[in-house]
Image: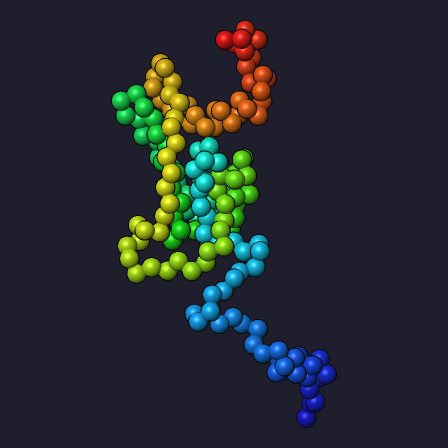
Length: 161
């Protein structure tokens, strides 16, 4: 017969003294650790609508549609929380760093419709004057212009205009 190792006895005594390691979640609120990856949220003020998050999303939980009506363009970005695997690629690849952020929320089960498990934001699009095709969202254009400053114009006379 093999005798238990001292390390195993030490762990058993610790468990008896300190109590269980697990949380009492349904009865007491659980606070996740600091770097927990929970539900992703778009921040409409900080998101520029560049769709970088949609391009790097492994399960395709983030999608976008461009709608052009009456000479006005809108880009609708949608994050589907029921498809999301909470990998954090959207937050890591956001150019602004604040456009989409993972929250601390982990408990969002619902008995309602599946359509409730999503978030949508809209951004205005800049359209081509000739063909009326979408070029870029206004917020993205302003963000790039702010980052580049006077270097964003190739013609110095355009800076004066």
